[in-house]
Image 1 (cartoon, rainbow, N blue to C red):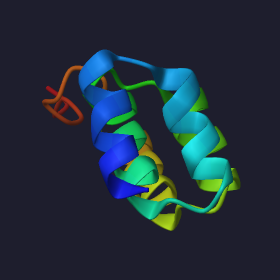
Image 2 (cartoon, rainbow, N blue to C red):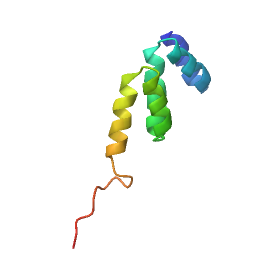
Image 3 (cartoon, rainbow, N blue to C red):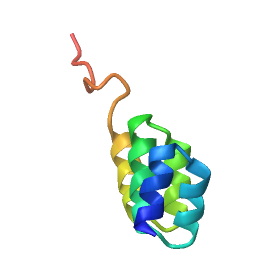
Image 4 (cartoon, helix red, strand yellow):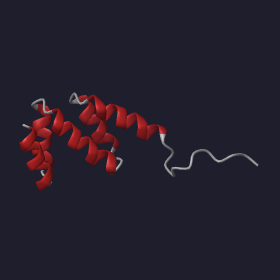
Length: 77
């Protein structure tokens, strides 16, 4: 299944990767999480986490903690 996930990832076949994740492929979960995190796709990360790949939930939590501008809160005057 890992090889199939790698082939689907190389082809950009997200449907196949999602199917492999649904079949229990943690490697497909890793690849989908990497893609979703790179684009900050919070909904996709939630979907991947709901499908059983826990690392997607951790990545989602990390992105939700990170300020959108990446600089943190501005200090007051």
